[in-house]
Length: 475
Image (tube, rainbow, N blue to C red; front, side, top):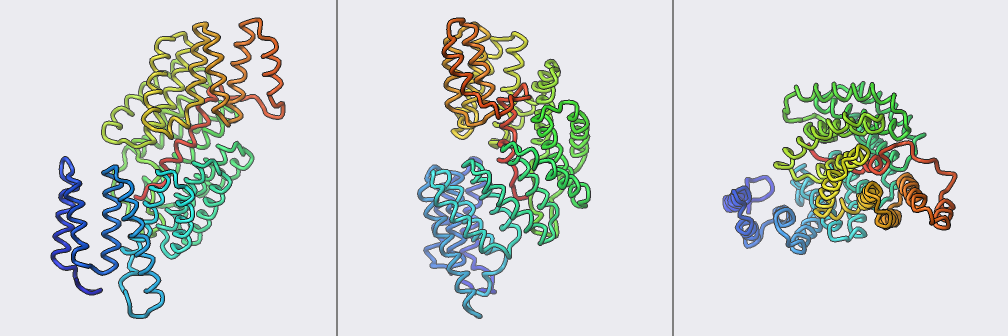
């Protein structure tokens, strides 16, 4: 094998070429791709090539097969070997001089990122967190990876509902981005923190944060698509903030700006974003996803303002676009958007008396949630609530009670809990002979908590969580 500064040997390039050919074939020939990569080890390559090959094997196995144990083994070796090389390089003036080049740093931190993702998939969160912390600690000289790993650990804490730790990490990321001169990524960190504050209902903290974000977004001069996507992120949070506070009239100017942003983005070319600052190598959402999102917040506003026909119109448009996108893109965020849209339109159908259609759409939500355990976990309480509302509409009070009782057991959100309790109380009142259960239920309501001001309470609280999945994607 060639030494540090020389070109790789022809056998190595040939094996990589064959592996890539098999990976990108239609259909992909993953078994042959894996054989080509495994053949690299027969030549006893230097450690840097060994680490890279383990990463490539781990990535292929993780993304294209169900052999998660073998993928994990290769990724763990890539992470271990790359740390060894960095240690030797740090303690020697002559060994492995090529290992501080950005390409090798990519190997080390991509291995850490992918391995922690796999750990989470295997419910080994306690292994993922220290791995990410270690990678964050040693990546401070590599701005792109440092920011990406901070986003990843913050997202992990969010999924565990540890929003305090997630907010702290996003605050660290915002300050780091400021220090390395990336106002764009600083805005991404701060807007992401704003999402979590909305989830925690810390509305007093959200307002000053959004004010700061608005100033940063307006003052930042950079790639037009990145700037407009920041503006969309900011405006979506503003709309959510106003709706959560029941300020329906305040939403209209933001919605108008959102629609203008989407029109602007649709005219911009998707040129490759190559900023000079590596910390800027992020984007929030693809513009097609942003278009669906604007439809979604428009539906949310229409529902709360009582414009049910408008809500149905924009839901139909959004669902049509989602179906087209899902033919080419199986992103989890699209399924989240679809479920939230359906939850809104189901309530709309129940209000307007279209019960059979509502039941069909509830069935659609069930099918979507069955495809993703995480989606089901996030929406199970809402689903049972909708079934309870349907049962009320067809006068099946026993079934409604069962659905609401299950929903209460599944939710930890105060607003949704209050919404369910209110409807369960209405069931007891309708039955006429459930006075004891009604009084017991009313005693559980905490008077320190306000009743929800949002008429679409069961779904509004999920919007920030859906966006969280799409926030960190390298450009």
